[in-house]
Image (cartoon, rainbow over all chains, first blue to last red; front, side, top):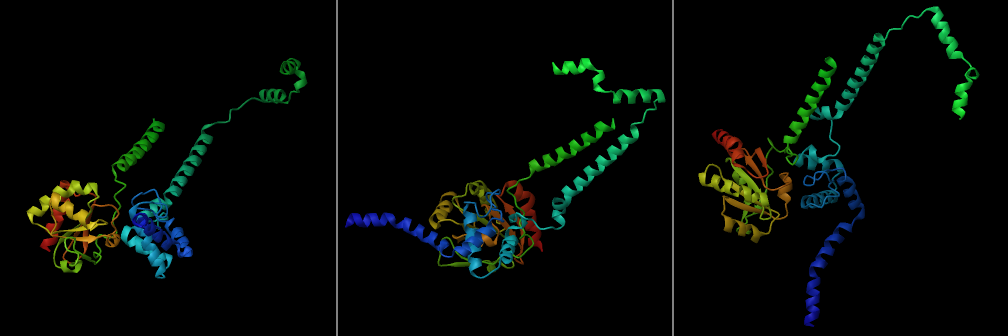
Length: 163
Length: 175
């Protein structure tokens, strides 16, 4: 009897842990919604991890908070606003467009435009730098003859290439 | 000559960006709460959980709220700074023992000294979330109207205390 009690006692913390886990799985729809939302939120402790995947204590607490707010019937936007008022835009993986993030959002396009403009400018400049060289009519005719030459007139070369 | 100057200037600009970037602390997330009303809370006192402390009691005073925990290593670094500040009696420091066991928090204060006017216990970390706490220690300076004026993320250093916190506290107290 004493041993049985001991064994039961040693199981206590395991039981309480299972209880917590059950609490989360009680409403799988809500849990899925919470994970879906938390995947787009950044954990402040492990900054390259989402709130959904982070194992930090704070992420745990924040997931709890999000879960509770969903139970209260708050929509996703309200919950995101709740987190942003506390932690700032930093928690968002998708930062909003505003004056402080303009460079972030449009900077790449500006750079692309600058690069494209420079490319066009350089190509135009090069075109004007390269002059067509004048050649006499005789030279032009000779060049045309050479270009139109039949390969059969060069038996040595074709033989070489076969060998 | 021009064709060398342009890439060089570009390189210098890029290097400048990288240099500044290296000096930034990515762990320091600017708090959106600065300039906003400090979230009101009522929490049990650490030394006597039957007594409650409410942040509303602090209206009309400039005060500091220091979030700490017995498990927090950086808190030990700032402890002597806070002790020194407490001795000067310039501004009351209120402690918030964050996600900590009551006994552990009490032991730290008993062993290494207590710089706090009063310590509350936020065992579940809910008030911490309201204050946007994401890594202890964090310290807030709150003015007479209950508005957060400054947040120190990480340990309070002597430099931060002398250059930022104390001048700010004096300015706010004079208002």
